[in-house]
Length: 330
Length: 286
Image (cartoon, rainbow over all chains, first blue to last red; front, side, top):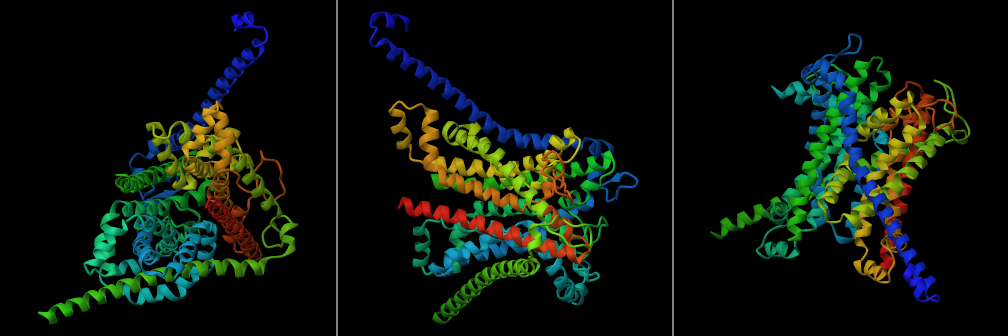
């Protein structure tokens, strides 16, 4: 730089200015790169931070109760005894009911939207189904509490009592006073909330099936159903399972809607028509009432369990969805 | 022989007809709930609408009032969430698309971000509780805003990443070959081209948080009175709806329906606007 300015006084300022500018640009480039890199890592750190902060917050409960925390049905704030079996059971049962309803319905919707419906109908119907995903969960909760719970109590539960309730073995699941609140109601509400997610994944992956493949099957005389069942479904199997797990992850972690219709009871009951509890509903209902450290710690420990389970389920979902995408790429 | 194949054919056709009718029934089943829920929210909400909603504070049990402090609290916390979540999200999305597109660390962050996108929001609320509320010693609007920011973040990261990846690489190469430094290429060329997509992401994130209740229960809590201090507990529409709907008072129920109506309309409008932006962009490109 200094030798440049000695050689020619007329070009010197521009050359040094250019160099200075290049240096400034390089510095700004480094800063910009650093900033966006930090932001990228921030996403990673948020997830790790969430996991560790809950493990830390729940350490008192884990160390006090040990494995009993998972297996005990006792939830007694007065005597500081906490066991998470009832909420864990409720979470799993409501999610299971939700998936039993949501998976076949979503599959049907996806078939309708990709193979059956006339073209003009596909866009609007798909948009309407996706609208279900946009409705905030608190609206589902209010509708559930004020409209759906009374409906279940008046019409559905008496019928279940009179019919399924009389059957041997499974009858125990469908007996009980018509309160309306309970596992079955929560499971149905969850199913409605999960349907748009599962059906939109299924529809998207059904659309990736090569048209040649389907046309070959039709040319051999296959019916629409046979093409869907024997060609489309096997081709997209991993992604369909991924979509189901995505829905399951949603159902396990859903909070407000379930809190409204589950009844918040810590008594274990065999009947699906009785009030129960779920992990998320317990936390939402009791967090601000927690009056002792061990109570709070138990609730945070519940949050940690929920986090671990949903993480595993969602990770499986991602990997399954990726398998189809990778084959698509090849 | 032909009678047998005829029978088989009839059975296959019958099976097909049953399956396709069931698929139609499934779609009707899905739409039925949509109509029922929206109808409930609209009919109860419209009946509960009144001007005092926007001029009065949330009332004590059993008396009349409005939701002014809750609207204000929701507005402030959502603004804070957008102000925090958007820049970090855009920066992280830029890192993924421009600096770590095919790398292992990029794939890991993308994976983690997708999990954050579907993770239960209640978990993020607990995280912010231990991180902010415990350290401050009390609930605050600030903590609520941070919790909501963590919910917006993965939405913005993902849309920014996807939108930047859609920008043709010729655009980058053309700008870089003129000697423009990379940060300027990103800010002045790539962002401009991906702008509408990123904006859609922010709007979708906003739609997600405007009905979000669970994380606010442990962070902002609630406040019956007017408060503009972000360091104090703050009311928000969803939390007030939750509290009022669970109560035994009719006047509180009616306020909860009014709040639910406003939230639903706001969320549906946001999703309409973002759809319109995507559509306009498509038309523009064609």
